[in-house]
Length: 193
Image: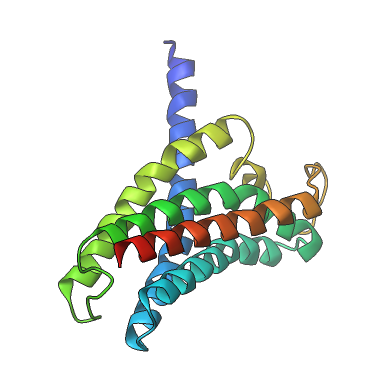
């Protein structure tokens, strides 16, 4: 391997790691908030998982949307970019994360003051990061996923060289991904009960 190839691979892996950390951050905020709220108010395990997944997608997408809006891009451009860049990563992260949480005995029934609650959440998020990393690498190496938005941070309203993204198609994929993830989370919670 030449030094140029090694440098390119190192750069790609760094980009993938940063993209996966970005995704993990948004997912973790939503996941922690959803699990904590569901546990605090006494929701069933199934409803708690659904709340956590919905909030993870909301925060995951918002961590992409807000900076792009602040850079001056319009919402009609930002929403398809967020859907294209984040959907698959969030989906993988949430499926893995929630299946691990429901698989750990007692984790869903642990209170907010219980180390099992926080420990299982930390382990699940760490494993979800590992699961999402190769997905992000595959997508970024092919100019997809987070690679779609990297050129637009700090774009200041310029929509030159915007990729052609079909919002309707991406919205259907995003809604389908949320539905699939919620469905898997519900089945996991019901099987664990």
